[in-house]
Image 1: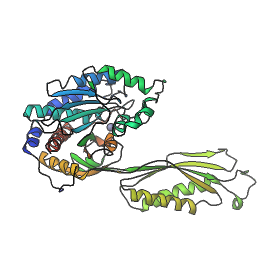
Image 2: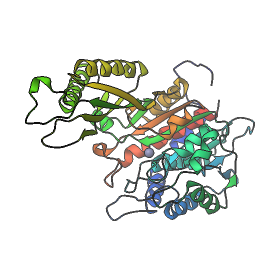
Image 3: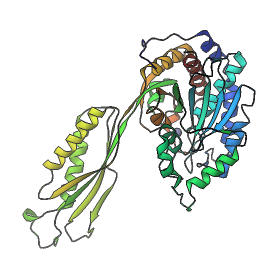
Image 4: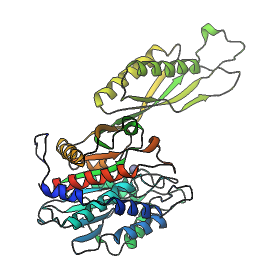
Length: 427
Ligand SMILES: [Zn+2]
């Protein structure tokens, strides 16, 4: 996608598709998908590549069966339906998300992005629109990462197929290999043709619930996601010297716990003083050795999780962390290890402009928002122009049976998605 002006007008076919989105059909599909692994408490238990998830995949295949449709499955068991365009030489526009859940998840996390995409295809059928580019809806494999680690295997392997061999060797808690579960998934959808992993995509949009309270609190129905925040994980180890609590004078101690406690509390104060609403800084793990009531601690290990949508701020926080550690080490020494880092994902300006125009066309209120959670779109953004569209989560609840969204917001999201997909598929 080449650079284009940030104001975009939608083709008439995009508006026609939007007007043919049927709220009743969307919610019916969403509720039916939720019966696969549905729980009495309203939640859904449908972990990646379980028999329950495979049954849901089979059901998905029954939703698009006309001659304009072809189902595909790739080496990562990503399940894709393509609605043909008029020019097969052009790369398709893609949308989707994941249908796997946490051990106990809600009915919308991931599932909404797949169902909203399928509803957009049905709306195109009803509107009699044939786009130039094909439009694909994908259900990515193992996004949640609760059964097989890491998460987002399907989208990550799609973006870089060289990652697949390591994923195939992953095992779940019962020793079942991802490769075997993947093979079962390939068998479960006989209607789907095999397709090579990682075909070219013109643009990708993922619709998803926000999973946080920001949009509900600001009263917006649609959120155009401009970025996914980056994250850095550190492990700090403070070394002191163990000694008798009764005999060692305070002035000569090398108390690792006292130094570490100062470091943690001062890091919290310093992070707060930055006054940056987008910044997250968390110490969630704190281990003391030897952990005896009458012995001065000689070693403390704690974690630091820092997140921000801008890399420059992550750099600034890293410098701040080192400054705080140096200033509050007392008589102790320390070391810092980087456990993990992922740069922020900045979504594509042109796809964002299309989402902006589509959101405006729905007539519902929209805002710009950053994503606090990782999504499949993060990996797609490495290989094609991508962006996301959020709908609000009631009380910000997610990864919980109580997860819910107002049907009007779900419908608004599907309408904006349909318009945006068609606009991208006509260029
Ligand atoms: Zn999700």
